[in-house]
Length: 205
Image (cartoon, rainbow, N blue to C red; front, side, top):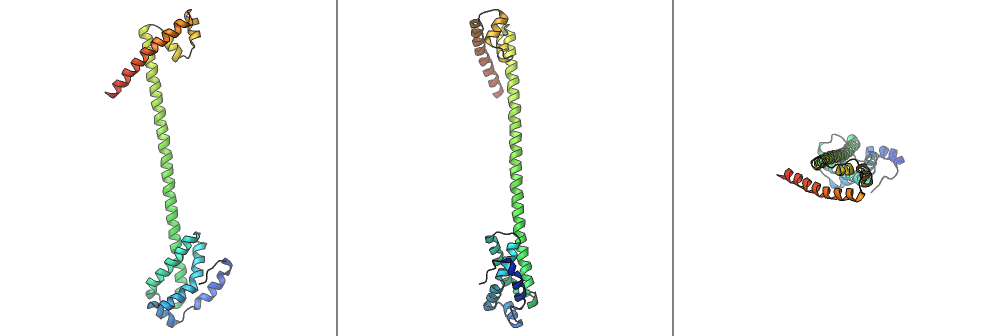
């Protein structure tokens, strides 16, 4: 069975393939003659493989095109009009099948790209939602801290957690020992935890 491995010899195939069958053999081909079909297959195998390869198909799919092309010949030979059009019919059939495969590849690639883009968009939306939720949490915490500071009449907890001041700086502002400030912040932290817990429980009601 001839296998075309060099594109430079395609002209030889094109020249010799016009007269593969006699008119009598062509008539036998249309009637399903297996011997004549084998003769066509061996004569045109290299040409059809070359056509499939030139369309850009990988080796395995190019060979599938060859097999499918001759399968179609077996199914549709009865409808062929004359022996002179056999080669053209095979080439056109092979090209169409190769283009169909390439089209499916393109569609699959587009679907994969759309799925990839959608996943990225969902990640962006998710990140955005997380950012909004984080900002909301910060606002709630800030509000609770300010409420505690207002109810106790002491600003140390707010200065420490919202303003970012150190216990030493707060002690200097209030003209009191650092230990007094740290103890007061610790007690207020317990009140804040209890208040924040009640706030979360109220969200679940």
